[in-house]
Length: 228
Image 1 (cartoon, one colour):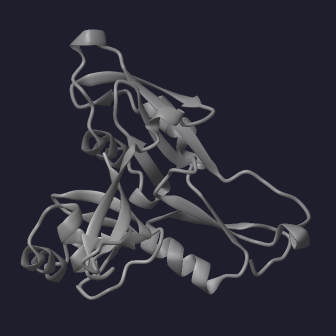
Image 2: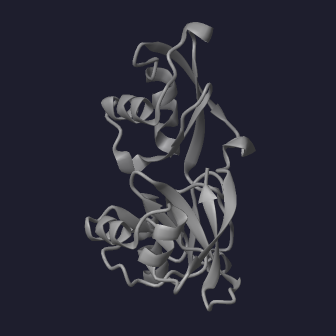
Image 3: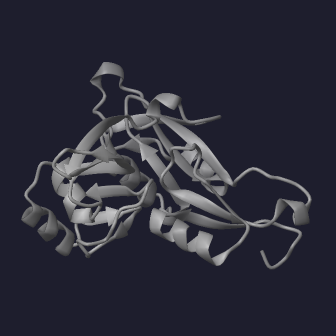
């Protein structure tokens, strides 16, 4: 931060923008309401120079339909649409978790406004209230999977993880339907690195763990964690 006496905060950032923030600033911390959050706020500032710590300017809202068993299930799209219909900008909204009770992470300055004004989503009347944290059961479940490939190239791993032909994987990449850490990647030869999160539209998402061994025929085994 230019002023060494205060922290400076961004809006909620996608993964690709988070990487840019890390590159351009030495003292940056990212948080989005939980360690498993995807959309995060970047905080710029050195705690040693500023002299104190402070909480990130976000709040967590729980959204519960009032219709009981007659309520229509809420979707991510329903909730986001209702919030934006109130005039909220997308960058002021963090992760959205749809369920029997839904949760949304939001900028703290908008929390009271949303609690007072978000009364209906779709056909459902809803109750909205602040809660202290996101429930741990919202943490994404993953399943470990071992795949054999001739290299850690993006197309080689994608086709093995999702049981596709190499040509199909290359077409998906060329059509810009594949992201690594939230950033569209159009080069099939891009090598994967430990911790990379790969999402393939229409097929799913996985985290690349790394090399796990060799086969007798010279193939390399790679471990991935597939999001369920």
